[in-house]
Image (cartoon, rainbow, N blue to C red; front, top):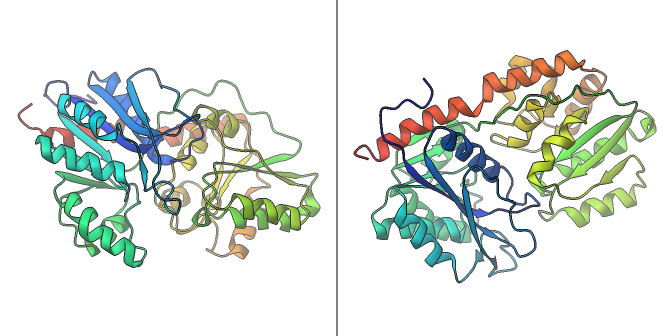
Length: 381
């Protein structure tokens, strides 16, 4: 049976850099919440700790404990990595002391670094889930951080959980020698509340942080390419600013595009609702390891279009080749969009797509594997 690992219930704390109502930290927050919800349902005691910006504090999920401290960036150039607050250390000391396992959603950020150091000082085992965030960018500053903090702290972890073999190889190139386990993202697929009503004008959605790697510029270019089809397609952008918002808005204005709008950031609880009434999610990001937004779209029966470098591309192609662009460039995106955007999914087909998502990416199977990892980390609990 799922969750039957013949061991007592565990006390687990998940540590995140940032959580909040605008979804600024993206997938890791949703992953932590999905995992925590399932672990709680299985009888484990789970807490999530994160930093939070004033005015955008997270809305508690309700089924497990969540706490945060207010943080702000110490360096303007590193708005996420340098987030810090005077209460971070005492809060982590208290939380880690009373839990058996520290599950760190690990990035080159001050809060995950601190959580690992505190766990070491208190003699508590910790595991690191890297979410594709520890990839070398070649900068000297990154190499120094990796030498002083990333490498030694990851090598002291009991287990490093990665999304794909490619990510594992990238970490091995950094001389990370801890044990690796491939652990995909999972999602709790809820029953569809009502069948999707086909829109007269098809709603095409981009929903992700607005940063260069996510390809929001390609989404704007796509809207420009199909601007003569304004009576057929409506392009909508959702997501917090990741450095590209001003450029995106300027591009929309300069190109005089009436068929595309930026509609702001969504609360995590709103994402599924928006996707469920949309016709297609387009995520033209490069080297996206395992995007949660794609799983969220599939879970509500909304088709997707991703680039070939996406870590989900092989799975998606086996389900429906049209879900993956024929090539990594803009021409490939346009060609695939022209094909998939003309396909209308019936309510029955959308329900079938949702069921596929549950079978392929359901959180239950992910947590089955995670429980076994926890048991390896604390075998005597």
